Length: 144
Image (cartoon, rainbow, N blue to C red; front, side, top):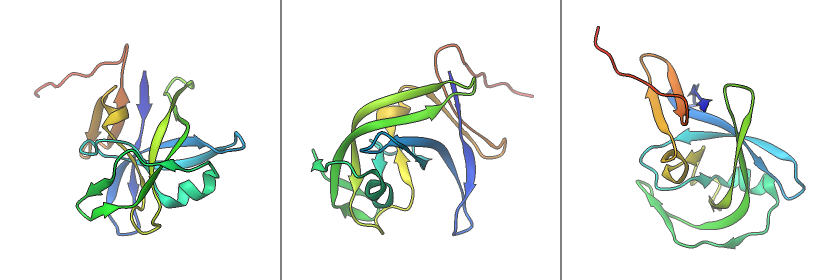
């Protein structure tokens, strides 16, 4: 399985590795969201903007969220995250996801190690590659 990402040029002029996904709303519709591929993040986190679009019941957070900016108020939601495979298929992850409630706490949603640990993660800025590999897809490092 290969899930392709891309380098997204953000408002601050910095290109960041993202994977575009879709998250299911309370009505069953899907909302497109960009997820920053963060191999240092322990878990996947939805931002406040996406949280408001989903309309899902808010659950008590299991633990607080913290990072370089300090701690952030959070809740949890149960929903599905869908990612597109390079062969045209999809992969769906159904789980309880953390979400921040402060609109300025997080610009992009975060794809954390709760999902990325299932894949070989390639973030290659010089080669302009962002992808997640699993199952029959492999990679090799060679020297020219």
